[in-house]
Length: 336
Image (cartoon, rainbow, N blue to C red; front, side):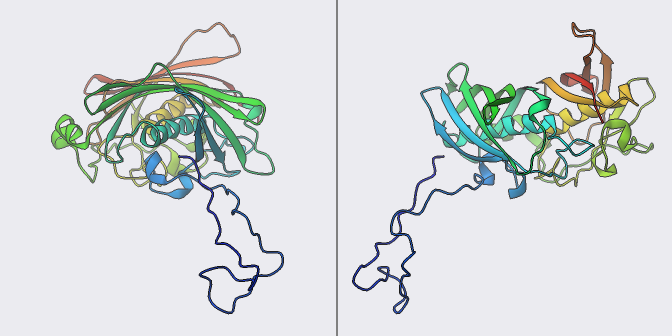
């Protein structure tokens, strides 16, 4: 959504007052007489499907050509969830959340998708460059080049589109990624989801064991841990706090894709503990909705790769024996 400059009321040189101002208020000699400058603010939270303004990272967009857009964003210096344990860098998964927000925002503001339509996310991939994720003395301003590959496919009221993104921090390449979405009207979504479309999610049956220690999964706060132990090696239960203010920012009838990506990060760290792995890259495929009321099993295993210094982990989630997502996460041992 292009920001429009607001033109201030004309200043009367005879009286020094703005037309329509309260009588008797004289304009000082230093008051501006031209347009009010364009200022920076976040985009409307509804465009990125967030309930809290603090969780909106986008600040605007500009269309460059028929298939390419420039999206501006800002990451705060400190975030209660998207932060590394040592507090010196932005969380790489914050790049994934920013790419997700860019897709939703462009769909609503550039592709004409109504706000009441529902989104299905099929893929979410990102690759970050850790040296450009260091937290500085000010918030981190970003520019995202988002390109449609290919043009969106429209079938009736359904739109399917894929975005390829390049995230820059000034002249530096901070991240790249892509994501694929399908949008459907709320009426279609209701038919797809049926009775499972609940405003208040019903959690899966309780797991008797305690959540994993935060340090084991690369976290600091116990409330951020989403896994509890399971009997089989390399296997855990997904047990997130449904009241978590960021993972469950707003009511949803299924477990959000970002929660599953966080589960993949934590499973990777649980597998490599006591070594902490920074999730520099991840490629996630979402196979079907993850239901709140069905137990979810998370498994992780190491995967050989060409880089001997990289730790590659394949993480899968299952409900009722069916896969719900697969993430291939690549990282290196965190340098403390």
